[in-house]
Length: 246
Image 1 (tube, rainbow, N blue to C red):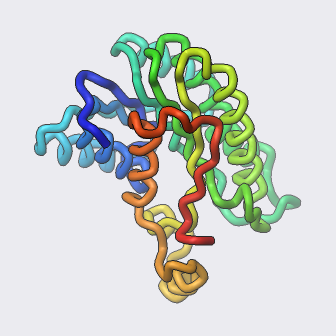
Image 2 (cartoon, rainbow, N blue to C red; image 1 turned 120 degrees about the vertical axis):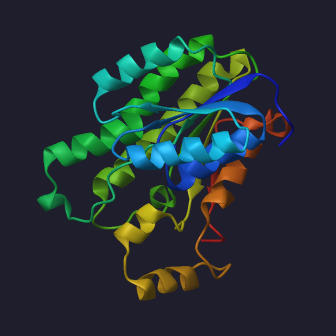
């Protein structure tokens, strides 16, 4: 990605995993980055300290994206920080395993809110002030193509996010704002390790991937950097699968 000058990026859920890798990649590309976090302040502080020590401009803002009221308030605060050239909707929830008949409504609502409603509100409130040539990048999931039993709320939320991506791309095209989504495959993050603590299971997942390994957070971050950069200006409304061949 080419060096950027005085550009700003917002990355939700940017303290760990894929979000953390996206924050670092954009910061290295010259962006001033604001990352949001909710439950893990330690990880957010560590990310800011690490990247700031290397000369990058990174700040952390706490944001509970499980309720629309908190998103509205966060957007008001972020609007005072200036304009964002890149918005990455990465925050996610809903991978707790359980069949539909055992899924509580509040679990469903939380997953839909974080995976779909929060990105909708962020686009709604930030897009009008984003400069021409900006980019919105939504982190979806391969589970929209390969839905698995036990994560109905996650699959539904990410599917809604992809529909939102396509509609927003058409609506914002006149402003030269691109809107795309990335579908990561199984990615070796701390969250993935928590969901699948069995090393043998993770090895099986790696063997299922044609490239013979799990994805790395930086694999997805590089795709995000491409979508944020000038080389991808003719790409919008697309779902980019980054899954090692799955």
